[in-house]
Amino acid sequence: MDLETIREHALGLSAVTEDFPFDQDTLAFRVGEKIFLLASLEKVPAAFNAKCDPEKAIELRERYPAIQPGYHMNKKHWNTITLDGTVPRELVLELVEHSWSLVASSLPKRKQKELGITT
Image (cartoon, rainbow, N blue to C red; front, side, top):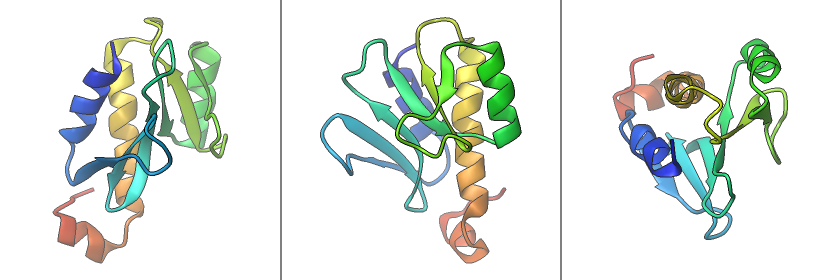
């Protein structure tokens, strides 16, 4: 698993855009202008931050050492997932979708409709 796989998966979700809001190393993925994923292009091993339900975040952190409280983020709501091969590929992709879903569902209904999002 690498960041390009994460990028392709994220961009395949509805109404997703990408940009570099902070520097040329930090790639952000947004839905409706709200960030749902942040990835460092230079970190080795590769890692990304994803929003997560707080209870699910605790369970994941207990089960997988490569899932930690979000670096430079609200640690209750964000995880940093290190792509070191210890977290199953399917789970990593599911966490990308989970993050997108949390952020997309928090958008105003008008914005969701405008973007063609059904949550």
